[in-house]
Image (cartoon, rainbow, N blue to C red; front, side, top):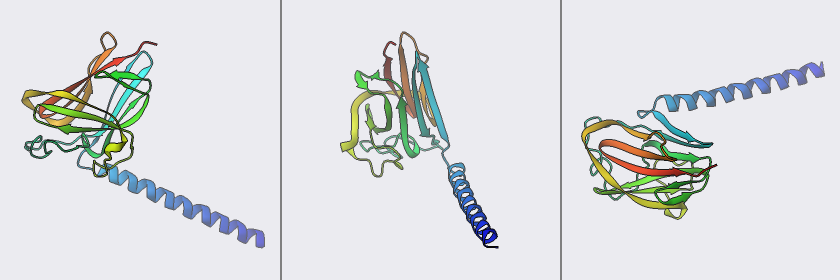
Length: 186
């Protein structure tokens, strides 16, 4: 009788743990599924080096984005929801800066004529609310390209690789910035 009771207790504990685990998975799924800005991924691969960017993709919705919705001179998460993250499987040269393999948060500081691109070593941040400049891996500026036709959804994209070079473009509203990336040889 005692072994049946112990078995029943173990069964109940396992069942309750499984239900709790399922509830956590469901609420995680619901929180991701109900976001106003979907999660998007952009990637490129060249000779064994893989670069992937994961970001929340907000929409313009008739707003003027840079200088109004996203103020000039302030750190931006470079998307929506969690801070954008970029992963490099091998070192690359990004706008004349050597970037070691790893994953970084990608922040930007939009300005009218240039953007400051920031790779930060603190991962898992929500937005830029707890951004810490002391955790910056690298910072550099790139010029703004003004567009005639507005881009509705914030988009991060890589150009096709040519001569071991790709361009990482960030575009939204009537603004685009291009970041050159050079792959190292095998």
